[in-house]
Length: 206
Image (cartoon, rainbow, N blue to C red; front, top):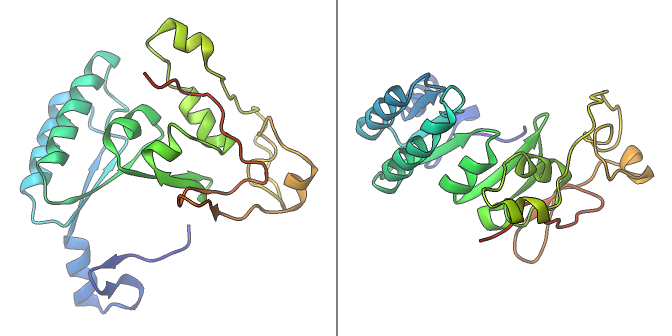
């Protein structure tokens, strides 16, 4: 992923050693707690930490399905009562939907879609995003039956040119094999890197 880290007016790549230490000290990382009690403790510690940004990496990956709802509620409460910035790194679309304001979707380090939760989760236009959302079951059987599931091909052959997803995408065309799609915004700021973006009913709003 191209880009740089900024803290206020300080850019990490051009910062001196003292400034870089200050920037790193302002970041608190929480990574994959194995139990719910560990996650809650880590969240409480983060709230009290002298940081500006908290990065949470796959916080629910080791939790049982019965624990995830409590974990999401605990994390939402912590975020709502915290003055800090929070960055959630996860492939769990349900957690993103419950906890995030804005979303950036990466496939093999390339940004394929970005925007608000409403745009990216409920209005996904990139096949990879749609596959992530499709992996989240709908609780209502009727909604589950009415949704359109997007499933990627298992072939993960690397592509030398064209779209990074072309060997796995169920909607690819010849243009996808030849040209790299640009990350382009629509009138609302929703950005999609796809030659043929299309909204599909992969999630049912209730």
